[in-house]
Structures are given as C-alpha cells and as structure tokens.
Length: 349
Image 1 (spheres, rainbow, N blue to C red):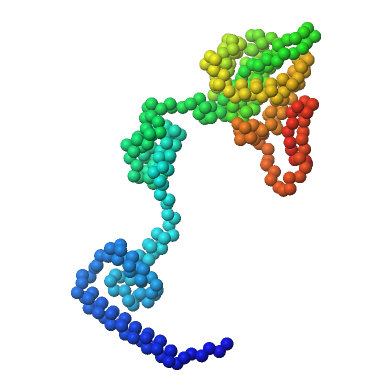
Image 2 (image 1 turned 180 degrees about the vertical axis):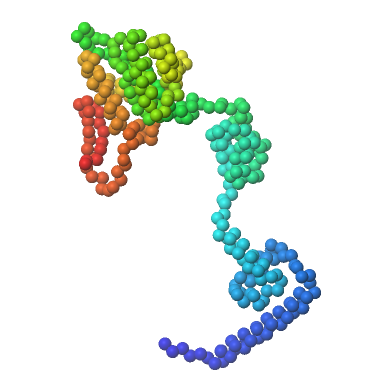
C-alpha cells in the first residue's frame, strides 16, 4: 500500500522540533550560568533523587550530555540501586495477630522465657516486639512465665525417645485343654518407635524360673539392636518387679522401669495393642489347646508387623511399602488369614 506524506505536515513537525531544540539549548546554557554560582557539591534529598530518576531514565544515553546537577556516575549508581531494590522480594509484614500467634507457638514449643522469645522474633526480622509485649501477650493467652510452665509432658518424652523405648505387658486368654478350661498368659513387647511387636512367651504358669528365662532372652535380644534401649516400661505386676525379672535385667544392663501404680495411660501403646489383638483376633475364637493359641497369636503378630497399616506412624505399614502411583489402578487383590478374619489389600502382580 502506497502512503502519501503531506509536505505541509512534515514542515510543521520539523519546525516544531527545531523550536524545541532551540529552547532546550537555551535552558542548558541558563542552567550552566546558575550552576556556576552554586557550590560544587549539592546534596540531594531522596525526593529529589526520585524526581531526577523519574525524568532522567527515559532519556537513555542522551543523559550524558544533559546532566549537570550531579556527576553521571552518581546518576548511574542511583539507577542501579533503584533496579536492585525493585527486584528485591518484599517481605510481607506480619499483622499483630500473626505476631501474637507466633509468640504463643514459640512459648508452647520450646518453653523459653520472654527475652529468648524476643530474640527468636528478632532473628525472624520482627524487631519491634520487646520483652514486656511478649509477657502481656502470653498472659492474655493464659501462659505463665517460663519457670512456672511445665517443662515437658509424658507424650513429649515418649516422642523424643521413641526409638529407644520398649514396653511389655501380660494379657490372658482362656483355653480349653484336655483337663478343662485354663487361663494362659501371653507376654508381649512393643517397640514404641516402629510399633513392632514381639511375643516373649506364652505359658499357663509364669513362675520365677519362666520369668528369669524371659529376662535372659530379652537381654540377648537388646544386645543385637543398633540402639540400646533407654527404658523397658511395664506395670507393677509382681512378676515384673521381682528379682527374677527386673533384678536380672538390671544386672545385665537393661534399664527396666516400673510405671506408677494404676496408670495404664503411661503404657498406652502396649495397652492399645492388647486391645487390638483381642478385638481383631482372639475374641472371635474358642481356643483349643496351647498349640492353637500359639498359632492364632503368631498369625496375628505377623499380620500386624507386615501388612496392617498403623495410624500412629502415619497409616504406614511397619516395613515401609513402596507406594505405587501409576494409573490405571489395575486389579486389587484381597488377601485373608485365619479363615477370612484378617484381611488386607494389594495390587495384583
């Protein structure tokens, strides 16, 4: 497409540009006269720098022939600093409610005093909070000063030491034998960290000799572990606290610890497992003989330790199974044990 240029319009544009050039030339000379009467160094304010940058940056390289108020290198440094500040990610300022929530969280998680909390806030860039502010916020939330706060709960102690904590306990099951009905004792132990259960013994007479043998087997078991046990917890059943069990374990270097009287919550992991094996397995059977009892217990323990998910460890199995995420889902197989009582699911091979 052919475009026609109006000669008159072109003349007007050129004349206007020439007039502007003459005006700019005059203003430069006038500015030189004014600058000659001023000190050699003029200190600019931040507002004045912002004005110079706002109108000077669009000029581009032509600023070299125009700038007189400051040196060209100074103006270029201002430009670099402004660009660096613009590219710097801005930190979101926390609201007073967020700061208060953070103070309460720190106090509850590490239980330190007002000064230490203020120091932690300072590390996070929150510098306008003093000790008295921290104290007032904690008092408003019903949190006492550090010396009056409980240092640690039993739950926190268990969580810190779970990899070296074990618990054991007895439970009973009625068994029909050729001589009639009899009660059998099952001695089980759980590793708190992994939730793995070990059956230490099954008997209808847990006497001193039997308990001494269990103590020797336990001591040998703990020698084979990577981490020595910090504590073996149990209740105050006389079979534990006698010299044939606790005394023998202590002499062999195993720290057995009786819990407070009438405090089943302190041994909650073991108590919960006993409930699981009873409600999920043993309560569904009439048991005939010791051999039948051992079979049921062994089947459940193997199921519990290998394929049953556990909520206490994030709904994982004790040996962590490799997660399969490929689609489609494919065939899902239900595997059963003990006549269909125990079930779990897996993908078909």
